[in-house]
Image 1 (cartoon, rainbow, N blue to C red):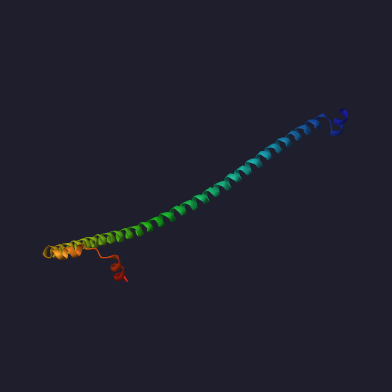
Image 2 (image 1 turned 60 degrees about the vertical axis):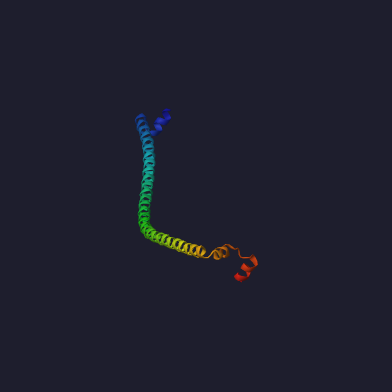
Length: 136
């Protein structure tokens, strides 16, 4: 052991060498911890940028969908008004058709009341062969 101490310069040099090596180990550990924390920070920054970009995209999508919804509401309102107008027209036509049917029924009843033979003729079934010929 004395030969080793003499080789490195004595006890005092051995102590300094030991302290130097301990300091190098401590610096290596701290350097490794710093590198690890720097990598974690960079990863978190990258994730934050991705999240912010996704948020911007989401907000743009929401705004686009809101504009489209407003357009569709306008179109739906127009179509609803058209549908209501068509329904009123259909109801009016239905009422007119029913009134016409009632008028014709009343006319027939007047004719049948005046002429019982007309009632009998109106109630007679047309033979199938004759109906087929009339259709052609």
